Image (tube, rainbow, N blue to C red):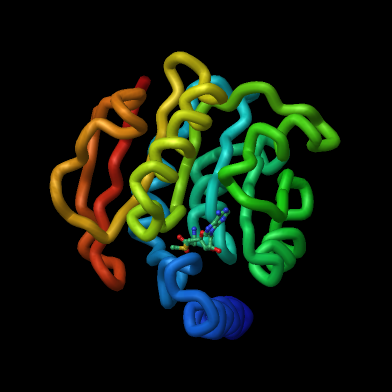
Length: 194
Ligand SMILES: C[S@@+](CC[C@H](N)C(=O)[O-])C[C@H]1O[C@@H](n2cnc3c(N)ncnc32)[C@H](O)[C@@H]1O
């Protein structure tokens, strides 16, 4: 119990420090709540051998929920740009494929990874996409579209609570969405399909 409390305190302290240093890239002042993480983790692929790609895992709030939901740790690939957060992930999830790098370079990062990864069954993203110019967000979503298996889902949360719109210049259509009120601030989880 005390260990869990200390870990949560350390995670929040790291988020506050990184947010003060770079608010737009960090995208949140604290890790996601367990309710938001659980809502993101509902969308695992049915094939247990498929890889799941997590973008912007931070200190692992959503990662933990994905594993609790049944994802095998060795099927998880996570790309986190912040090296301090990536170091936390390496310690916490030693069997996962944690890549320190920029999600916008995911095709090269996955190709150059020790276990080459060509396609994934789901992309679970916490990237603060609204903080990026629309053209950059479109470019990222086009890359996601290329790596995602045909029936795969792209799951993204956002603090913008409005209804989800088609994304990635029409590459993705919304198929489900829900608002999670028990998060600071409340967030909308949107699920997209090609
Ligand atoms: C809103 S936080 C979410 C963290 C965690 N998934 C959670 O829900 O608590 C966004 C995360 O995206 C990371 N990030 C921002 N830009 C990135 C990029 N270009 N590539 C990879 N990660 C990035 C940030 O460092 C941060 O950890």
